[in-house]
Length: 500
Image: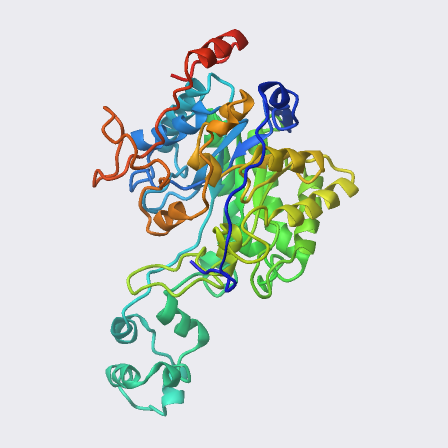
C-alpha cells in the first residue's frame, strides 16, 4: 500500500472513556431513525469483506461466526459485506443474484438477531462490479491476448506481415518502444491487467448498463427483504460500477455521462426501481464517496450536490467513504489483479498509522461534514454516516455534538474489538482493545484470504470449538469478552442479553 512520504508515526489516542451514566446520557447511545427503521444507538459497523463465503457466494459457518461476533457487541447497526447482485462467479464473496441465496442469507439474519438479542439492526450492502483480469505475463499478452489491428500494422510498417511475425516483432521491443505501437489501454492491460470501465460504450453490455442495472439492484433488494434484512445499502463507492458513473471521469456520450446531472441519473434510477420494489416501509440508503481522491475525480463540491440530490430523491441514509480507486492503484505482480486500495486514494480510504501531518484519524470528517451541511441547507434531515479512523468515545461524541455526523461508523476499530460498543456503554471503556491502524487486516484483504486482526488472531487458539484459518495459525473471530459477575448482574437488571 502507498504511504505518505512524511512517514510520521501516530498512535491511537481514544481519550477519556465515559462512565456508564455518561454513556447513557450521550448522543452516541441515543436512538436514531433511518427512514422507517429505528436504531437503538448511533453506532454503525460498516461493510467489510471477510473472505469467508464459498466460491459460489453461499453463506458458510465462518460467515455466520464473523457477523455473530460483531452482533454480540450490540452496535446500532451492522452492514453485511459487499454482496454481488449478478449470478456470476466472483470468488469467496457473498452473492444475492438468485433466489437460491435467500436461505443462507436468512440464516445470517437469524444469527445476528439471536446474538444481539434483537437489539442490532442488520442491513446488507449490494454491489455491481465490472470485469477485471489478472496482470498477464508479457510474452502471453503479446503472443495471445493482444488483438492485432490495422493500427498496429501501420505503426510497425508491417503491411503484408503475418500475425505471427507481428507478434514476434512486438515481443522484441522494450516497453518504451512498445508504447509507440500499442494504445494506452493496451499498455494498461499489459502493465496492470485488463479492466472494464463504464465508459467502454463500444462494448454492448457496457453501453446497456443503464437498462440492466436498475432491475438487478431491485431484484437483489427484494431478496434482501425476503431474507429478513432490515434494509439495503446500495454500493455507490470506491472503484466499482456505480461509483464510476458518479465520477467526473465518466465521459460517456449518452445521458449517463459528462454533466453532474447525467452522472447522477443512473444512481437515481437504480434507487427509484429499488424503492418501487421494496416499498416505502423498507430502509434504503447508499454508500458513496465524499471525494474520489484521484486526478480528475470528484471533489467534495460534486459529492455535496449528489448528497442533496439523493436526499431529495428519498434515500433513508447516506454513508460516506473516500478514495479507494483503480486509477492510482499500484502495479500488481504478474498473475495478480489490480487492487484499488494500494495507491494514494486507497490510503485515503484506509489510512495507516504511518502518515502525514494530518494523521490517519478522521480524514473523512470535514468533507463529510460539508456534505451534511449542504443537505441540511437544502432542507433535508437525511441521516449521514461518517466513518474513517474513529476509535474513541470522545471523538465519536464530538462529531455528533458538532453536527458533523448523525451516525458514527467504526470499521477497523470494531474488528479490533467487536465489544467496543457494549464496553463503552457499560462504563468499561478502559477494557477496549484499541485499533493500532497497522492495516494488518487490509494486507490480508489484499491477498483475498480470511481477514482477521493481529491484536487477537493468535490468542487463545487452544480454545475448543473455535474456527481457524485452513493453516490453523489464526483464529477467525475475536475471543469472547469475559466481563465478570457484576456486569452480568447489571445486564440482567437492565434487560440486556447475557454476553456469555
